[in-house]
Length: 81
Image 1 (spheres, helix red, strand yellow):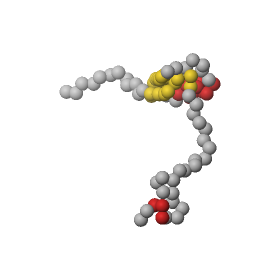
Image 2: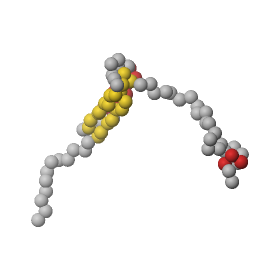
Image 3: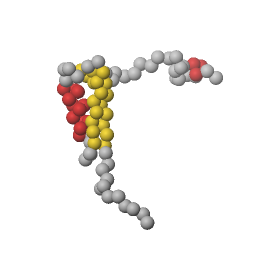
Image 4: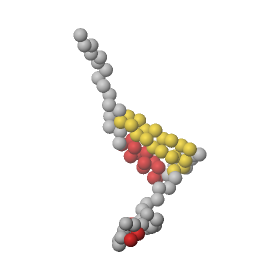
């Protein structure tokens, strides 16, 4: 049975018109927009106690913001007998 023969189900080649969604505009590393500053601020706020924020830039455009949360140990090493 083909999907195109079933009512109310689009075939695999049917174009779907999605509702309007905000388009993510590229962020320039040369002219920092308020939106980029907000993204960086949110990334910093997402770090618990220890962590890092990495900003990837390609052709003067911010392409990725990566956050890492780090769990610190107490530094004690225990030996087993």
